[in-house]
Length: 464
Ligand SMILES: Nc1ncnc2c1ncn2[C@@H]1O[C@H](COP(=O)(O)OP(=O)(O)OP(=O)(O)O)[C@@H](O)[C@H]1O
Image (cartoon, rainbow, N blue to C red; front, side, top):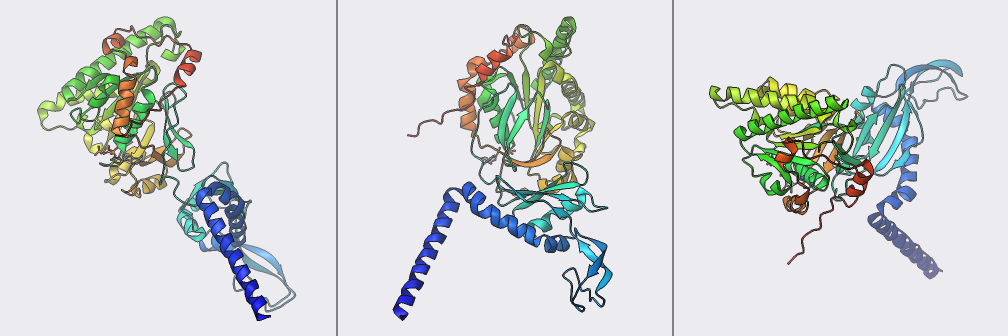
């Protein structure tokens, strides 16, 4: 008899061990299906079951008067230490916000709540970190789709730790540069948001993002122009695909003059054709779009002595004009810099106002974060300053939908960007052709779609 009991115990132990190992292997090799079938249902039950305690602990409940009926006088109620002396009486109870059923997402779950009277989404944002700790999740993000409703999106683990795909671009002037923390692609679409500020401390991933853009834009029928105030070390290797490159302030002044002239020519072309922007022109005369990549923006504004003042004023005014009027005439800016502070002068502040696309990598000084993301939610600033140095490429992004997100760019080495620049060198329009107006795209939208399909997948070089 004891032998049979021992054998049964052994069998049960083996079954348990095999089940645990199977679940472990399932979780390890196909996390998504494991999460949907096992993780999510357990989590949904536990979140619903513990919501009263969590809401109370995170300060999201409100006291409400309720009639209380009990058949057991003297009971200590679960809503607080209310000793019930009568069977039927009015007592103050802690009411939690109404919670819908949590729904699974790619990296966690999302749940809608009904706010209580007097609450705003900010109350939930302020409690987000406490909620994340209570639920033992990586982060909780708060959004409000309509008044009276708040959506909490929990991520189980940081989705930005590994981001390694580079899907091809499928539309003109639109590049998928990375992934948002929600799992959705992070896209830079110059036709929707024409000018961008890309800030970050050294080694935070600014140049990598420029590499991703170069790889994405190289196969497209666009002209790329570089302003490399690091003396050309960043962009010179990409010169086969650049129509123009300025590497000193004097060259920048000349190139900016050309851009302002180009804008004036396109303005008169549009005026003659009765078009408001180049996209309303017939494809046969539509000029090629120009994407201007600026590296080390601050260098354009730094003044060593007074003799440079005129040059700086000229540069700053020209850049601002391009930013103000460029959109309609197919000239787009992508300005990167370590520091974009107001101490660089009013030119930078004015330029910033024109750049509605904002990307803030890890920064050293709070002012750069404030300048880059200033008019966004203050929580975005806190998030930007909390980006760890171990995750270069992670940034806070003001998205096209008006929200802000944590995101990470795909890793694209300088070699991959150089290869893309060489591979698509024959698509580079010369600066003379562009400025003389002899370089229309000459493609219908259908041609363009076909043209863009092969996209920017650059084969890795063979090893050895
Ligand atoms: N998205 C990413 N994923 C993985 N590694 C990245 C990513 N972005 C950048 N890195 C790594 O971080 C390092 C610094 O990146 P990068 O050169 O782009 O920084 P930076 O901000 O331009 O620095 P600097 O201002 O000094 O030029 C690079 O060696 C690169 O390998």
